[in-house]
Amino acid sequence: MHQIFLSLGSNVGDRQVLLKEAIKLLSESESNIGKTSSLYETEPWGNSDQQKFYNQVVEVLSDLKPLELLDNIHEIEARLGRLPSAERYMPRTMDIDILFYEHMILTSKNLMIPHPLIHQRRFVLMPMAEISPEFIHPVLGRTVIELLNRCDDELKVIKIS
Figure (cartoon, rainbow, N blue to C red):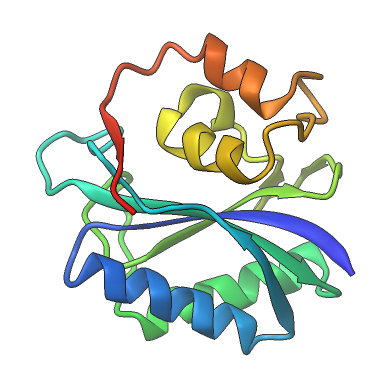
């Protein structure tokens, strides 16, 4: 099984319930759930004119290939009410991003692994550092905790549970 880290976020509806449901659906889609971070309330990144997010990082163990996993993620997002949008950084019931897929580096039309903005997002680095602080970013060659300590993102990220 492959070790995969996913970022989950929600800022529409009952955010906490939606995150729990996303984890449940992930566990039902040929994946086992490993560690899960605490919940964090975060200011929206990229578009400040919306409600705050609840964010969480989840370790998933799966035999799914990256694009198969991405298809499952899109299906889960849709089941949880995410509507397709051409605009980026808009409010959403569920947003799931693949952060790391073991130490794979993948660049394709539909998917980049590791996620290209991890090192710029405190709302990803804080929960990731909670569950795997020594994980080494395969492109940047730094641990997650080092990336967090160097992160310039000034948006508030508050641990809530």
